Length: 115
Image (cartoon, rainbow, N blue to C red; front, side, top):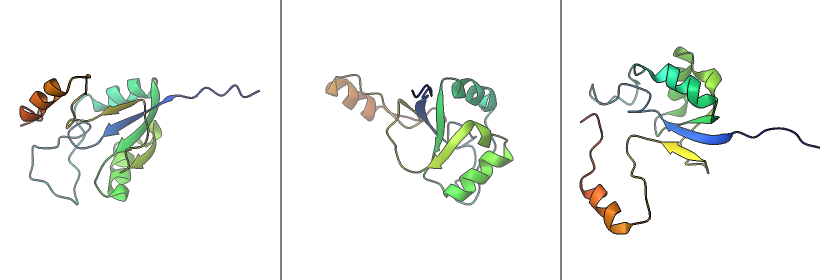
């Protein structure tokens, strides 16, 4: 009998969610410092689900950033693929709530929080 408990997969975006993205000009070879409160947030969310770092950045650079910030123990993997998950946490998304007209309006008025 398999008694292993499976946690829900949660993808968390890097830029703008876990780091201070948007405060400096973009540099593909540099990931900004960790955002205040991110460590406590990750610790809490890791109790709810199995965490995956989602980013379009270089995966090796992103993995190094996790290590430098002592966050690697909370993440199962780093990916640039939107794997099937229970939840996606991203600063550039709109939640579809079943109404296309509402979604179109949100798209037209969308702004990231840090602009």
